[in-house]
Length: 431
Image 1 (tube, rainbow, N blue to C red):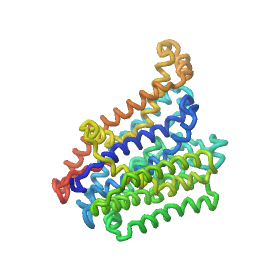
Image 2: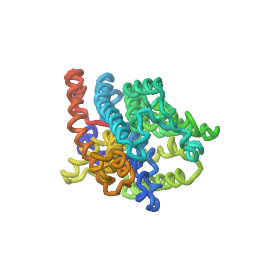
Image 3: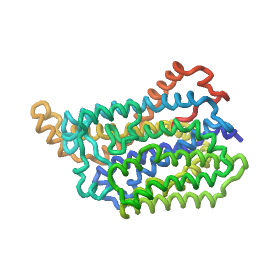
Image 4: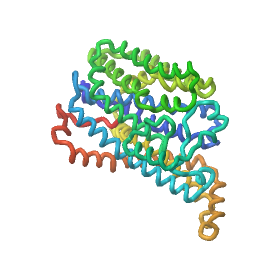
């Protein structure tokens, strides 16, 4: 049997990719009435937070697998932080710049409905209050110069997740900011959590701590600003997901070392548990009272998310070389998909409207050309092209830019010993 330290989890690679695809659907599918008219689609695509939380759990699981050796990391903490930064920051900066350029294009073309209001200053205050649904215009805001400058600095420093009031430029980039905070904590907490004697007790404690803030918010009926943003993304409130992933790997590793294997029926029961949790949560989130959002978003689903990662880690490595090859490529591109799918969607939708309108008229009648583009309804065919193109571009971006940039940064700023690590094992984690 291959040593556990050298094992590649193909099931987790596919899961990373599918989580990225689901987040793409969550942020974009609601703009297509053709999709929303299908019964149940709205509910099934509403659980973007489930995918993001699962990704945080998966990151803790994979990093614990790759880096924790005994009661310490396989390499110094400074080397770990540098590698994580070299992996995240190129993605973050390219996604940030891409978002600004696409917004500028949308603002210049001014194609309805989104183009006329497009601006890097435009934000929406985060709230789950009933007013956010009945009067959304009350929560639309254009940042003044001071706010724009302050939030630009937050973006450049990858600290934007700490702003609980609104998200700027490219909303999903908050997840990269939160991930980097997790990476800062990892060298101190991961070895301790991995070597904790009562893993199940620690999981219960972390789960309880995770549920306390949303329970308090629900108890106090604080559904507005800034509590929605605090619970949604401020890193300190999302740490239990990352720690849960580390503890989940501790259980997984212990079972592997003891050669404890789940039976087929146990795996099926685990799969049913995950599916039921997801479906019930989707129903409660979309049709239940508004307080369910806070409880489901911050805590109630953590056991099912850890179970999902655990179950996918048990997946058998396929015999097909083609499947193994693509699982690695698609899984590695998942973080780029999280970061780039919004600007790529805005660009794709704008270009589809423009070219399906009356582009020839732009040479003689610019207002008429833009009006014709505004009358175009985005098509499902165009949406499918967007999805496939985004996946392909993210794979190429990860391999041709991010991976190469990371290698250059490592070669320039880290010593040979630090690159290889204490046990001579290459860095296999790109979470």
